[in-house]
Image (cartoon, rainbow, N blue to C red):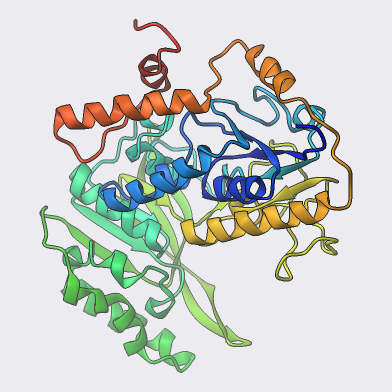
Length: 436
């Protein structure tokens, strides 16, 4: 259609899908590029294993977005430096604007000694592994019997639960920089893990940290409730394992033998309150925990090799936006490029947040488009360019075939859900490569 705006959306997680839907609803043609074969992003590959009803509900919404006539889907296309196409190549295709909703694919590292030892992992890699996202699904993760997870949010709870119930982990310790009142997990998530909490040790741990809480006049019962309120709805134990908290502790180093992790060193903290915020301050006192695995559940950052300027682990945004939405800047410092979801603010919220943020990013794009005339980019030429990549590029009709095959496999195996765990299996199921 002549005089129709054409926008590239990079990343088909919730932010990208709902952003693409918002644009298409306003008559914009959208080319939706995705690194993975399947759409869904963290909604497909980040939600805990057994939440089948939630996943099916989200997939239905995503399917409805993809079925819109104004949205073209191109999966299995990696965009970034060293990818199939660079961001500059995408921009050179003649789109009226580019919306980046590729999530936060970079790994946040603390630069600690021993981070490269076998047994030291990032939470996202482990979550991708158990949710069968290639290539993480095919990576070997030796977990051992004792694990420390750095963090106190819902991701920590998910991973601890997975290690105990699926990997036979005997002992999991959550290493928490601040105190029990500052934990970030919800009662609804903690109910799945709390039956493994060693209550005697928890009471001893509470006694240990009381002086630090009293020093800032914090009532210990606040933290006790935040942790223990989930007990009334606790899942039954299915394994013989123990879960612990190690409060007021920050990791300082990992030590190992023959390249394999054996110990985590932590520094003990005190609490400091300033301007109504509670933060942790190191005391210089250090001790070690005997562990086989350390998993950092401390959030994510964007991929610096993507092709946009970065600042503090996020893509740099225009601090004086021309097209703000609800007072927020969705504009990259690069002209005509917008950011939404975790690409705008890494590790912020979950699916509902990503949906709202992606939709708002699309609204910012719409404001920008209203200031310019369409350039009449050519969808056929873009498809031809993608076909020249010499690899299978996944279209909407391919996804439908894959969905049907996986649904049939689930029925045959009497499972609530089934996923192929490698790209090769998915491509074979879609008939895009021959069966070996």
